[in-house]
Image (tube, rainbow, N blue to C red):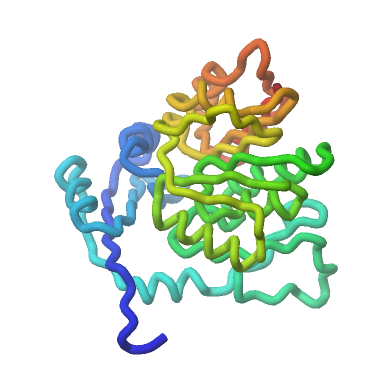
Length: 284
């Protein structure tokens, strides 16, 4: 990188709140962004909320509406930290994920599918319970299908689920996210993994309509309140006998999600709970 190269500015909005109010703040901020990060320990009385913004005006709006503090960040340091090696993760038989700079351990058999994912500031590098469980569900669902089949990835983040879908046999993957930074990171990861059948765009799930498209596998890993609001259009996108993978759900919101999605034609098939997070598999 030349000395004249400049990265876009990034601002970080931060606010510390009571741990007992986490669910309230997640719901409150869900309509503002899908990029909320929550820091805290299980026994802590408080948690720290963070949102990254590429536009200062966006960050200042958060300050005006929700209080908190604002900090201008050194993007070079953030990128350097995100590029630090992460340990390889074996998520399912023959499916693993590692960072873009890593080397698979020589003493371990190399998996048939090895995803190389650079997280940067996009969600989804395989470590989080929601992403890992979605990948396992996707792996199992893909084994039931014969090509060609298609996938819809709502709230794609780093693009990890889209990339996994193509590697597992999808003939085409349609994906979108409302965060432009996530879309940029996802497109970079798509190129890094040499995928050619993934279309990723910027889009708001609450304004999105599936049209006539129907998908054998639909994945939506977004916040509970957004899932509930978008439930009708998400359900319409699932093909006959297709599967729907839902995640990003807090345990306290599980009933609301089931009430919004389970219908006479869409049944709950499996639930995985890890910590405070829930991932659901439903089938038409």
